[in-house]
Image (cartoon, rainbow, N blue to C red; front, side, top):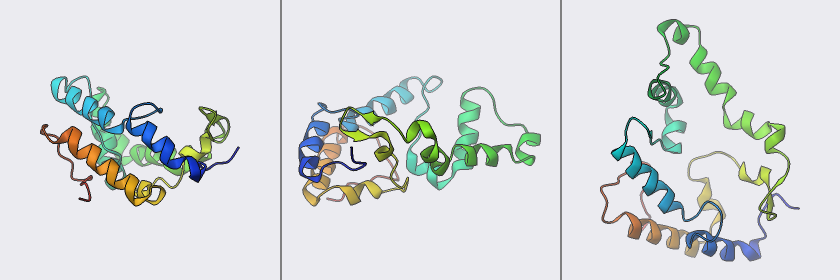
Length: 157
């Protein structure tokens, strides 16, 4: 089994993903659902974006700790506990874990294919221009009548 999707099947899988007939899709429904729930129940749902985590992991980890009721003490911060957690939970460390390096997802691709580079925006390197356009159109359509905004994602049309 390959670590990459069969390119001849990419359009088919992407279409199923956009229609919600493939795991993790449609993406926009997940984002909008969690975002709305975080607005309605801010004490129960914390909405974070991967791009923000990558941009400022320390601030986001502190926010998460406060959200779950266990903020870091000044002593913990001074001892480098936050930096240690960031390193332990880094993309590189998670990618190298045995559990993430074996098995397969849905009989289609190996689990390790889910760990590419961990870079913001890298997903666009795996989609054709028509797929990117469809994603942007879906995103725009689902979010046009909401107050959702993101400093990290702006459709390209």
